[in-house]
Image 1 (cartoon, rainbow, N blue to C red):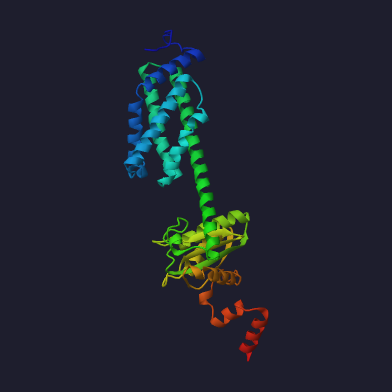
Image 2: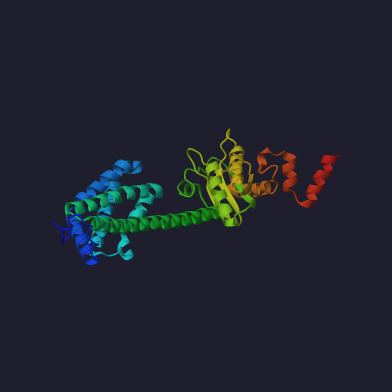
Length: 348
């Protein structure tokens, strides 16, 4: 059993030298490494018990959790025994497992909760080895400090990796949505391609579709930030139980293609999104096309939505072309000469 080299009676012992502390901690880490299978099993059991989303993982998902826990305990205990910091190159394996968490729908908060549970288990087991070895208060505090530093570094690395992965996937998804929208506007997407495209899951090309264009009328943010925030709000407003809209930011506006949903007007939902954005410092105007049947009519729907949003105002931030009188539709879409003629005829 490792103990302090001298007995001081009732006097306070002097601090241990760094060499002695390193020796004690290496002993505790060495004992811990001999029990890694047991420690890993405890970590996984507590994660599954404490994190609901982990309890719902299938067997292959649990196997991935176990594999990550095993590698983490090996890296942590090795660094603790060597008295070294974690090597970022050595942690490259974390990215593979983080991508798996993202793919399975585990949020950053849920993943960090799991890390905290697992890390706390590892910390407790490390301190238990110090108690078994009869560490003095000085040695025990140093063991706790070094273990905490290593586990904090590992958790921070996992969180940073998760954020980078989410950012990468979001950028990829946004680019795919823009590409799909451009193909739709050029009439180059068939029905089967749309039905299987993950940028617009569940969007049925056989049903009536509505095109929505949103533009930022006023904001205290940057335009790009305001547009991204508006795109998220529009997505939420237009999503249904069976389908998600195709939403993309395009040349200073947000464009969406969504099911017409007869009997469930989209205008009120967009108005609610507008009110929520206004509280956050963003004034969003939206224009809606009339329901268009089939993909071939999406380009015409885009033109209608652009016409409708041009008529939006602070008094009427959401304009649906389907709700405007037929004569007003004609006037709005007419050339200057035709508009003057229609106006004169209306006054006769």
